[in-house]
Image (cartoon, rainbow, N blue to C red; front, side, top):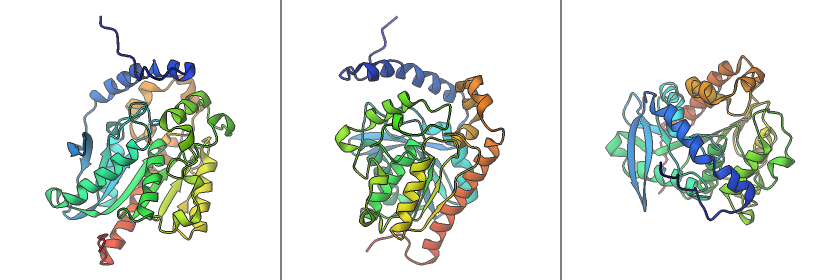
Length: 329
């Protein structure tokens, strides 16, 4: 049997090396589960500059509708857009918008800012090719989960700087502070391992980058946030990252940004995606961990997905009806 190629052999730090050596096996196991699932989204391989990227398009029922871009969680290291197929399908149905799940590049192979560039380039692609897909690519919203929420929040800063139009963001249990290592955070959630979280952080960005607002959005100044898109932030009550979601909401309010923030009760980190793909959840989650979770987390997840879809649908429809159509002069 051929020996599996070592992932990023140039990384020699003992703690990271031990983690990286098991990453390929975990990815392979997770992909095997998803390979056996039927996907509702239409698989597209987009030709972007210097690379191809896979996305899954859930089309709106009516032509000419806006687009919501979805970013899965997984600590920047794991995850697959297929895992959130059901969430994207529900969001398309509830919002009346097209929904695009993005298979952004993962770390350590492609560290910051690769995943943020992927989101921005996918949005640019659909703006340019909106007629080909019967959509309005100039009206866009983004929803992200965990590390995907980090990417979404970073794209919001680029939009605030005038790089492209973005009409709304939803951040679920977002990771927004890479300056303070996970070992320094309060840990409410039994399934949030500080050592693994620290590995995610160190693989996503270099130490000198972690104070940048694009990596740690809670570090943004009011001047960075003045034109930030309207945002919904939904931290999970039992999540170690809860406080940074609340802090970012406060910073947005201070900058005059429209923001809705609600701590989802009894919920754990990742609860929306867990509930959105129960076959995956049951296959990868230990029984001892399941026993610690609220029996109501699936109901809260359904409410969170519906809230997200309605919020973004409203923001995108109001822009459309207002006549601006998201296009910049």
